Length: 377
Image 1 (cartoon, helix red, strand yellow):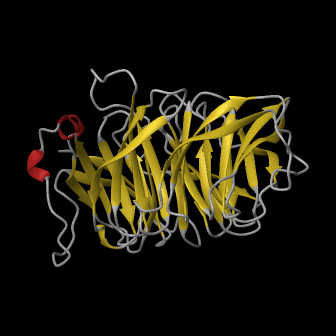
Image 2: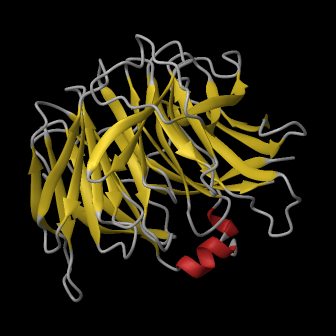
């Protein structure tokens, strides 16, 4: 029977934790909070922890017990007062993991770097331009581009020139409401944005000109987040409408333009088709986060597309098995594990699978705690 085992609790933030992010090696975890700080955590003995040898650290969530960080983990660094307001998003630079980007409700995005031998990250750049709250920040796989989005309905793309120098190369204004998250495709030069206007937009570059190449419609309320499959063929999205949708790309030269898609920067050259849907009967409230990892078994059968995890405002963590269906590009999604009150009576704000160690999942919530789970299929 598939289950999630709680392996560690990371305690230190003084308010809700909004987002978590693994570094490229899968050994450090960054977190950000309404307390205006960012923290970096790591297992004391990473190889032993992720090998599963430290099974003695498995625990239960006890609402009556005072919380403290598990003995198997430590906080490497705390960046206090990283911003003037809530730190909403945090992400490691994906190639070497030496830099961090944080996005804040104060309207700025900060770049943090630590040179070899130094003990603490220092702010080497502050990116300004959004009119108000910045909701999400994401590095491109190459580390050369950075995307941000915010309450001002815009998506900004920044180019790194090295040594903390960033230039804004595009401001995209096609969304009609808040933009909740930005996400880069793992292999192609595509950027995806998720919005309060109930749509998902896919952005593409053509000779230094970024434009909206596709609009995904179907969700009936705010689209909070998304995640690509490991190979980038599929995109999962989650929404206020309590559904999970899985999409795949269709290349076409005849995409119909309609009122929802029309816009100055809209030049459709492909479309996305919804090939699977988790109905709204599974999640009881809005789904805030989704993460997709590959198969946890090295001998997985053909058609095994791995696992989806969702974090929801019904206080529940869910894990789904994703497999290739018999017909076309369709997939089957089956609920395999449910962890109620994963963050006590608080919303689960973010879920993130470890990129290197299959089956290890980090979560955070309104209770201010970061938790590490191990999936036992």
